Image 1 (cartoon, rainbow over the protein chains, first blue to last red):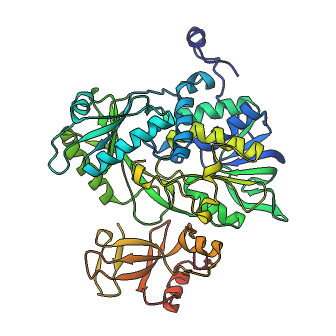
Image 2 (cartoon, chains in turn blue, red):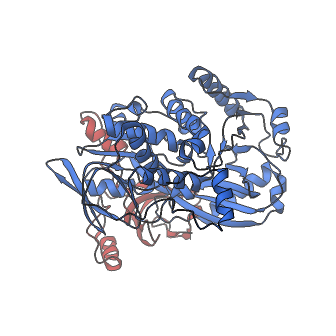
Image 3 (cartoon, chains in turn brown, red):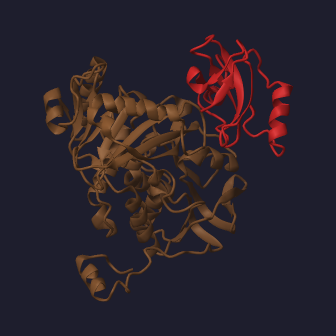
Length: 414
Length: 110
């Protein structure tokens, strides 16, 4: 693989861009791999990358039924933060956030990580107390956050309406090292690095069955033939229940559609990410100038990747209230992704009842921010059988009642 | 936008008038149950990609609960039926099979 650099850009400019290589090989499935990862989204590719980088396991295939990064990796609002309440969450999300800081250098691929800061608005007294508690918890966890007053919020976000008609802004939880990154580039960068290590990223390869012998996984059946493996990682977000069904176990997960939309591009007006959980909307401005807006989830199970219209109405209503200038904006695009939601709103990184099968799912409405940390921990879990970062996120926590309750801390804007 | 008919009051309305209540026909377990049974009742869900049996409440109408059979991929509603039953009525199963001839019972309560 040729390295990307300023010198490479200059060299290719001189020779009319004839020397660029494919970022990753268009691989054909082999008969057998040490590890197969189902799902070439951010989490799946990151898992494969750290299997190779940290544990030297490179006989790996990453199978993707659609195209690389075409699921939730390409459908989120790209927010990165780690201001969670519970210790296990803070540990894995902060690991992820810190890995994002050096990801462009590690992967030699510009993921445009922009630590521009994230504010979660407190608009009720209950929220003020909740975020103060989170700020104290974060201080103990070593996550740098701060509870700020309404004046500081207004100073950071001049376009905000502090004295809203329903919910005036009473303060906010401010994480200065949170921000955004280019979501597609995260998937592409990992895919390029995986392919460079000799792993096979196989697109348009849909898994239709999981083969086992005496309770141990032996391989998968796909639309491109049978492939054998020693270990199998299921990293498919919204379709986790569907894959678990093939393997013969159930998951404490329900899949729903979550929507997002972007406006027409406008001049720079807001250089932080703002989340307003009480009125239910969150917004940031992309480098292209579009306002990137996240909305709510549908209330019922579905796999539609579009979502119900009235949720857009609710989200936009909330944002017009919070940022009055939004009322003048035209919206360009709307889309949905299928998110896998668990009972305690925390992910599952775990062994399963089938020997050799591991799942990484349940990230719900907030998986993008966790991609590198999730991949790091999942790789350790697959390679060594346990990881300190995943210990608390096992499937057994539902039977033992050891929940990692982030539903209050995270709400929907997760 | 889903359009549902409440079998309690007979009103046909858009989904904003209703509230979804999750998987229907959960088998309830209490004192004396094993940990696995209790976990299954509280947390494990079918989450099928296809036919799904679920609970709904007519919140901005008569306020009562009912059941619906719906496809989670196409959002087609096969029918709604009373919540006063622990099994799926035959006419609802017939409607599902009529629209999905290859349906093998995936997503139905185990």
